[in-house]
Image 1 (cartoon, rainbow, N blue to C red):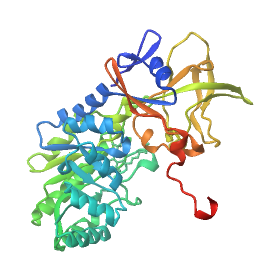
Image 2 (image 1 turned 135 degrees about the vertical axis):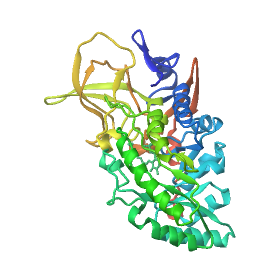
Image 3 (image 1 turned 30 degrees about the vertical axis):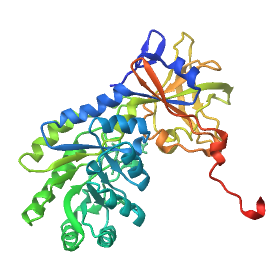
Image 4 (image 1 turned 90 degrees about the vertical axis):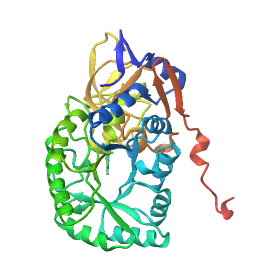
Length: 418
Ligand code: LLP
């Protein structure tokens, strides 16, 4: 459910015509809906309201400060994977005791930063990392709160690049080695074992992988409790999918209905790390048609947004709906919708049936709020695009469009080239 709908022939972001925003701020332009973001966060918070829980928004999906502030003001925590994300989470006012830190390659500086910030816990991905966190916590004379990221070997039935919880993946500790690793962790002087973490993948559209993974993790939890471990937090990761095409993913309330009865009776705080399902459908990317090019056997609609602005189609062959910002009655054509980047992989859609667009008209790439801006780059020296947040009838620029000078401001010349 989102607030990008047609009123008559015009696409609106909440109560504002998208065309008006495109004209005012220029394109390419990311537009986010405040009400959609809030609604999605609340859908999680409400679904689990009768059970101790923390929703830790996965920053990697979108890190704009306005989005983080909105979430933080409503009691949301953060799932981070780098020092940079920790910096952003703290800056947006997210309370450190609602921050969890995953990732297979935490550096010494990042571990120090997180320890010093007193985050809720590290989601540790290997024995080697445990040793390193213990060593650094020792130097800082602290105890590091940790969960082990356990790999439950469940196939989430999603795109292979965003599947993470199987034996073949680099993530987490295999479930059969879990007890041994917990024992090891409990012997380390500067480690405090407090949780279990799992995350099996992203854009999961069935409920069964969540249920199967939960069952395996709960067996482990009971075994650990039996061995005298005090496991207080169960972090079940993110991964709930969104509709890009015609998928019908489960809702947070469906997850709650299936998962809470399984947890029944155990005294733990449940942590979830949704990213895409909070911000994905809360954002669109608006682009302007530049040229229609008649190719051999097919047409190309060339637009001003490229793979550097939205990488998902090029990287995963991901599908995004592309809608005219103003509908017309022209006949439909079939075309590849491509950007200006000098790569054949630079496309937003392939072989798409779409109403004919004319030069200067706008198209909206839907469901672009997650892993859109956060994965963008300046490739081909294209300045970073602007971002706008709409709330009802108001709109605010939440990131200025980059300038040419921004592209070079951090570059330096060796003396012999000056
Ligand atoms: N927690 C952990 C440990 C993760 O690795 C991820 C995502 C999440 C939570 C959030 O998952 P979500 O709720 O967003 O599914 N760039 C890809 C997605 C990569 C996801 C990486 N990990 C895409 O554009 O589809």
